[in-house]
Amino acid sequence: MQLLIIGTLAGQIGGASRIAISRGAKVLQADDIEAGLKTLRSGSGVDLVMADATLDIGMLVQSLNSERITVPVVAVGIGNDTQTAVRAIKAGAMEYVPLPPDPDLIAAVLAAVSEESSAIVFKDAGMNELFKLAEHVASSDASIIVTGDSGTGKELMARYLHGKSRRAQKRFVAINCAAIPENLLESELFGYEKGAFTGAVGRRIGKFEEASGGTLLLDEISEMDPRLQAKLLRVIQEREIDRLGGNKPIKVNVRIIATSNRNMEQEVANGNFREDLFFRLNVISLHMPSLRERPEDIGILAEHFVKKYAKANGVEPLPLSAEAKKMLARHPWPGNVRELENAIHRAVLMASGEKIDAAAISLTGFLATGGVAAGGGGPEENASTTESASGLVGSTVAEVERNLIIDTLLHCLGNRTHAANILGISIRTLRNKLKQYHEDGFAVPQAGKSERPAALK
Figure 1 (spheres, helix red, strand yellow):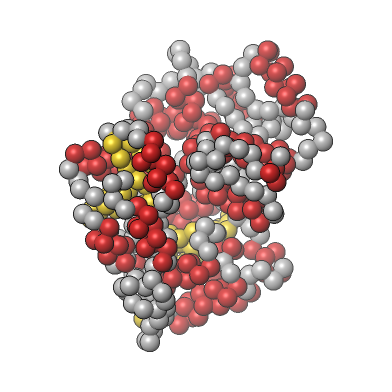
Figure 2 (cartoon, rainbow, N blue to C red; figure 1 turned 180 degrees about the vertical axis):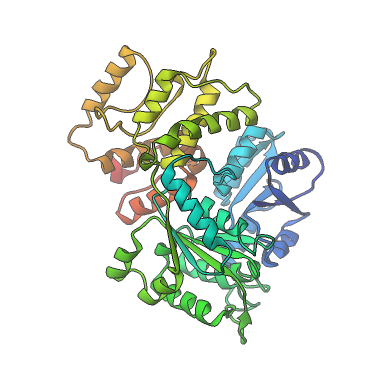
């Protein structure tokens, strides 16, 4: 990922920059907000902005909004200054990170934005055949749709395809179609000219131009508005884009990979997705299986994540106990590989003794066998869990999940990143859930709020 730091690199912010670089991020720097905005307009592919909290965060966020630049902003400041933190969050910052920087906190923020891992670990025969097919088609310029449930590794597959392609030395640019409103998504994809709309104070390069010569990932494309689907179809057919406010087309050379967690044929049949666009994109289709469909991989993935997070946290990797392995094997993994990764990360931090036992592993949801909440522990803990679970009888799984998410969000005072970490899901999945709750008429807690919304009481 690419990080833009706005503010001086001297002192503590420089330390945050070094930590980010050590975690694999590429870091750009701008001395002030105007210089930072100029960098963002240039098409440099910034994934996250980290700004000095002493700067005018409100003006930065307002400028990003008015210029239709969608990028998360994290404010950084000296110490746990509550007033500064509250002011930054109210101004629109996604997070407030105190300085001097904590390596684990910086890593968590970067992980919440990038949500990716470079390793592909499996021994399942079906996965082996899938990656053989992926390698075979990677060298072509054909458009590819990757489908599968959330957390199965669709973006990881897209990066694998890019890395095996003739475009591997060029840029891989990803954009989440589900997380960006339609009017912003259009400017993100195609860019705009100065004066194209109120707030467009300079030319902005879009994702298509950023990815020229390389690969553009349209993540969760099934969420794209039909009007924008029509524009995308023209781009694919003509291999050229029109910047908003522009008066001449611009040739682009990109390979498109799209992902979706929906049944695309059904979306077409329901009229939610254009059939002609689907046929243009679906030259090759790859389906990522859920983790429960590849049980052989649960153990080796768990061991891989133990080594990964033991190294990241500077501790010795401990073996998983037999009881812990059984627990992992029984869990249905609704969050798939991402849920497993988060569970093992927590277990590495919580484990004591010579092994990672079941008590160190905290799982969300319900076990397929028995219907009690997943988790480790002895008879007393299991009895307590069964008693609390009995109070949920009569509720649907969706209702239980919604209340768990809302309660966790309230516990975190509306902080999405912290809530996602506790729940063991990605920030993207959490945002999608909250978006759905809002559309269904439920009030969603905002940052700094600890009271349960009236619609959910």
